[in-house]
Figure (cartoon, rainbow, N blue to C red):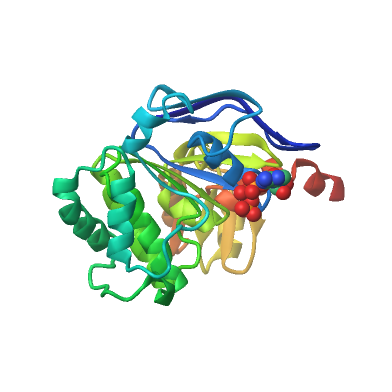
Amino acid sequence: MIRTRGLTKRFGQIVAVDDLDLDVREGDIYGFLGANGSGKTTTVRMLLGLVLATSGEVKLLDHPMPGSARMVLPQVGALVEGPAAYRNLSGRVNLALFDAMGRDGDASSRDQRIEEALEQVGLAAVDKRPVRAYSLGMRQRLGLAGALLRRPRLLILDEPTNGLDPQGIKEIRALLLKLHASGTTIFLSSHLLAEVEQLCTRVGVLDQGTLVIQEDLATLQQPTGRTLVRTPDVKLARGLLDGQVEEHDAASLLVRVADPAELNSLLVGKGVRVEELSPERRSLEDIVLAATHPASDQVAL
Ligand code: ATP
């Protein structure tokens, strides 16, 4: 759905995006992570043909961008750097204008699609008040409604939960999952690790313009081969697992055994009360920090 090869953008001396090979497949919810200034927005803008690349290629839905923009963009919903809207007009009128400005906005179904998009983002009850009276969260939702108007196959969203409160973030997450379940491929940029961890199936991590990780989340977070055991009988368990306990505290142990079932039956068989037992997985935070600050932790040791 999105493929870039050697995509590079320079602003004078600054290399904002450096030799980027992105692969977003149909059915992905792709989380594009990176610190402030790492090049996410510049990348998103190049994907959509809003900024010209210094070098490299972009394909959206298998067609080269920006050359095929007129054909491709009607199938792509986008929200980049906060929604643009006429502040003195209502949300509905803004959406109608936005739809009419696109070449393929089918006028006969416009009102229905607008109501549907407003409903999807939780703005169905919005009245005629102008956008200038909207909260930041409402404007963000309106921008998302604009992205959904054409019932796109691919959604490209730059920081879609910016400015939303926790309830709003939860609602947008539920909406994106629903759209994904109905067949929409989603690419979203974010600097929020927790958001990406909860929502995405695939992750790309940008560090100072360079893609340092691109992988399925399930692969990144596969079990490490160690098992975490919670038990009130730490001392007894340590005696039984001599040599395999890598860390422990007063209530838990981290054991170098990959199979929790095997470990459970061994411990319970010897009278250890097991309260909880789970395979250890790395958090996305640990994975991203290791990839973006590879030397610093180790140098300190
Ligand atoms: P944020 O999360 O803060 O939005 P980002 O990851 O989206 O950051 P970009 O906005 O793409 O990062 O910026 C990447 C780099 O390119 C930064 O160093 C930024 O200062 C620089 N940059 C972006 N746009 C321009 C521009 N028009 N002119 C000069 N430098 C730019």
